[in-house]
Length: 428
Ligand SMILES: Cc1ncc(COP(=O)(O)O)c(C=O)c1O
Image 1 (cartoon, rainbow, N blue to C red):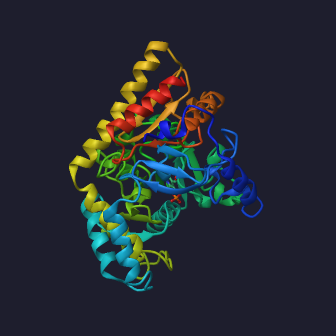
Image 2 (image 1 turned 180 degrees about the vertical axis):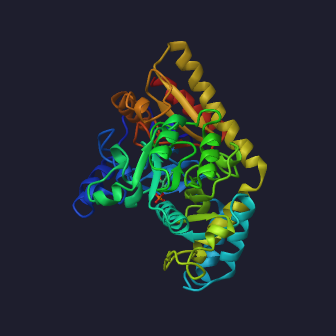
């Protein structure tokens, strides 16, 4: 039975989710542990899920959805992948955490190094936030400089150093002294990078970039942009940190750095790397990574870092992703989705931009393509919210955000996509 058939054409019944949403808000601020999950932007109450399998999500009221959230990135192979489940079950049965090195950690490190050629040595942590936070500290320790440059609207997790941008990338509680150490340039505007570098010559430790921006409308880099930034960083002795927490494994097996001609000094990974288990990783040249304690003097630690269950999930995932067929499937399913939507958008001359790299995509309610933070301000969040709820009621779950990346998984079938296109086009 397809998702839309299951949900029928009537308004979705989500009585239990509504009740639970009220109840959870009394004990967890905002009703969730990560604010992006909330429905503040689109309105209404959140949906509570109790099962995820393949390309589908199942809620507590008995509704089924085609999943295009992909857990905000990790579910690249879909949900409950048998090999990943078996690997994690076996690992937990042998001991969930040792607090000491183990073989799975060694195997996983070798696989990551094999997958991302710019990484000679790697450290595992528990989230993308930790990966970027640690990479920034390492860059500061290595260069003995304090300031970093990032791009307006870029999202690099919730550490103080990177919450100095705009909108939902900023936060009260970040000390102004910390914010002063983070400088902003404009994505896809090389001149803006050159200007910041010139103004702060001798003060900069690193530039941090999401090679494809995933939190302001899915923005690919303009041709040559990242290459020029990488080159300038190398000329100026500033470390080039690629935050591939979302793009790593997702846009290509070797990450965005394999699509563009760049060689980051440090790469941050997370999300898809753990097969659904909480993970982060950062790595780069041996020379830089050796600055970490105990060999060097840059501190990073973690009780659960590199834990066996996460390593097992990651190993199983990386082995499956080594099959080129997975990426062919991801590409053809996402292309199928975009072709169906684009034909409809063209026919009706709708002010909607379809933006994607690989299987991360955005359905952007804007008259013109979005290329940077300023452009992204033109996105019609209200139009998106209406669309979100209309397709939700027909069994399609998108990120509840007009700007964040949606994801296709290798578990989506041609039929899933065909049905999704039918549902979406009927609502546009
Ligand atoms: C590019 C990027 N960097 C860092 C992070 C933070 O990762 P985590 O949520 O695992 O802390 C995210 C999460 O959305 C991200 O998209």
